[in-house]
Image (cartoon, rainbow, N blue to C red; front, side, top):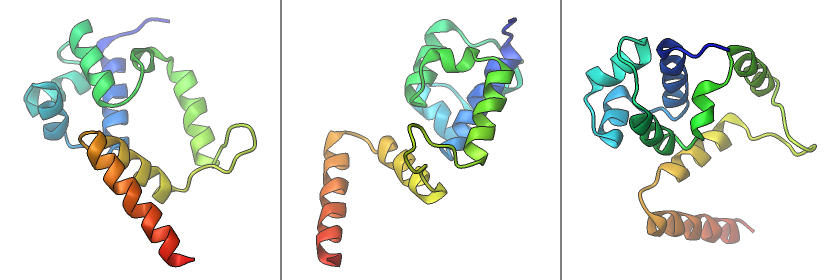
Length: 127
């Protein structure tokens, strides 16, 4: 499989959009301008290994995510479209997926702990 800058850029864009992050937002996370993100996503500029590692960490994926073949990517997309689940567990709804993404994007352990405490309190209140 040949990996080119355009394929990596497409994968960056796909993952960024899954997290509902703007090009400007991703740029701020990794220390570049939104114009640079555009160039990465279009394959105009190549992403250095160091910068790709930062992008992967920011988007919560292993670096290998950017090198998966388009065939593997399409299979994963089909699974998501069919509400695919692993080991018979119910797959997350789109709303649950969004909540998980937002939770993972919270800055710091304290913010995540506070939100989790709030959710637990809301669950007890509903009983």
